[in-house]
Every structure is written in C-alpha cells, then in structure tokens.
Image 1: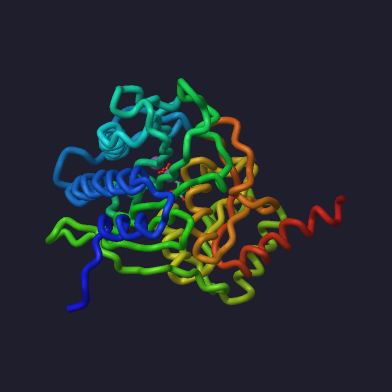
Image 2 (image 1 turned 120 degrees about the vertical axis):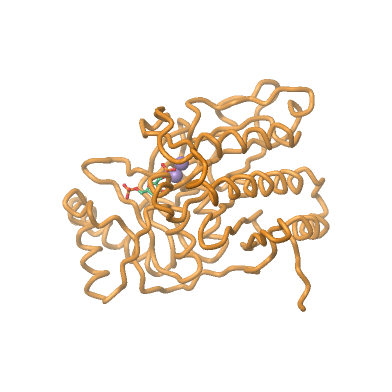
Length: 331
Ligand code: AHG
Ligand code: MN
Ligand code: MN
C-alpha cells in the first residue's frame, strides 16, 4: 500500500522546505481544512436535515441566501476565530469585513476572504458546490482596514477551494504549484491524491452559461461560435468551483463575461476570481478579464465583480484575440 500523505503532513512538510515559514500559515490551512470537513458533513446530509432551502435572507450581492450558505459562513468564521492566525475575514455573506480582535488573534498576520458556499443554486438538486478562499498578509498596522482585503490578487499568500462533489476535495496553492487532497471519510482526513496539478495547454471544453447568448457582446458571440465551429464540447455546471475544477483537471476554458444584464460580469473578484486565478496560473494556465490579468486588477470594494476568462493558456489567449479584435477596429 503506498504511503498516505494527509493534508496536515503535507502542510508541515511544505513548511519545513520554506526557511522563512513560521508555521502560522500552515496552521491556518489546517484550520480551513477542519472547517471544510465540518461543511462537507453538513452538505452530505443536507437533504436529511431541515437545512435545505431558503434562509429568507439576501446577501451583499442581493442574492437569496440558502441555509447551507449561512452554516458554511458560520463554520468558517468560527474555525478562523479559534485559529489565532487570522486577524480579519471578509465573506460573500457579510456586507463588511469582520475584524477578529481578541487577544488570541489581534496580532495575527493573515486575513482570509472566502465564498463559504459557491454554487448555492445547486444545493437543493444535489449538484456539486464548493468553498473558495484567499489568504493575504495584512498590510495595515493597528486596526484592520479595508485595504488589507482589497490587495491585488498577485499578493495572495495562498488560495484554494473545496469541491463537495462525488468526493470532497481540497485544492490549494501557496505559490509553489497546486496540490489536491481527497477526503477519506473513513479516517476523516484529506489525503494527497493529485500532486502538482498542471492544466493542459489546450483543451476541447468550453464552459459558459450559453443561455446568456442574447445578451453577450458581438465579440463574445463570435468566440462562442468559434468554440462551436471547432467542435468543442460545452460543459456548464453552474458552480464556479466545479466548472473550474473540471477545467483545471481536463483543460478547456471557463468564462463568465460581461453581459448587458451584468455589465461587470457576475463573479466577484476578491473571493471567487482572484483565488481561482492563482490556482490556474500556478498550474500553468491563464486568467484574465479579457484584457488584463485577473491578479493585477485593482479592487475598491469587497464585492466588486469582474468578467473572467480562465483555463488552458492557448484557449484564453484565443478568447482575448476575439475580445480585442473589436477594440482594434474601433480604436
Ligand atoms: P454563489 O453561489 O457563491 O453566489 O456563486 C454562484 C456563481 C458561480 O458559482 C457560478 O459560476 C455562477 O454563479 C453561475 O451563474 P449563472 O447561474 O448566472 O450562470
Ligand atoms: Mn460563488
Ligand atoms: Mn456563495
């Protein structure tokens, strides 16, 4: 039997290979792993417990909040508060950032942003959903400030997601490649299952909500037609985590462009696009808003949206050519 490497062991091994590591980030990653196991347990029995369905609330983006979103948000906040390694959090489900200022945490050096439950519309129909997180080193002194959370994506110290699918997997990067861990419920451990993930440079799968075709720009319509003419397969799950995970493993392109309905796109820069962009780039892929690298975009507010095109480098570059072709004609 080959050796099982748990997430905790892997994180500690990675820390040993980094002379500057002090163990705080390792501890934070393990705490996020713990929160993910608790959320996974709730997701796996969501249909049984009166936890499915609407919580009767709306979040900062004006979307109906499902009960599991609230549970996931509370579990992550609680685990991060107990961690002692995090001095502030920002979440899709909270309008403003939340300082963690108890004695245990106020001098911690990291802030964490997260989408506690991504793909909420899929909860009630048993389709894969996920959690997305981004970790930054705080830049402020004294009180936590908005600028600690609105740093550019390339300042991320670590980023990752958990996909609650046919199995529960955590995929993360601390800037030295991307590794995937599958939860073995029989031992309650995330075990290394996908070492050093690399995204294929090409792919034959495009992933977009084609129902929005009528409200796409001409350039996006032309790119979609290009994908169809090339004989690509279209796969769209409607959970960013699941669509990005498939893209990372099989190659292809995932995109949520600006539309006349959503002029800035739908997906949020800070806790959806930046963490995913770090993972895709670390795996050898590309992530842009059609013009600029996602991780170079300026953020001014927590729930800021951006168009996003990410995946196999050659496919994203081709999409940019279509998007920029119009600009070259009109400029
Ligand atoms: P969330 O559930 O966190 O609000 O995210 C949902 C997002 C993302 O997961 C997915 O890619 C996208 O919404 C799907 O949007 P459409 O249903 O408009 O295609
Ligand atoms: Mn989301
Ligand atoms: Mn969400």
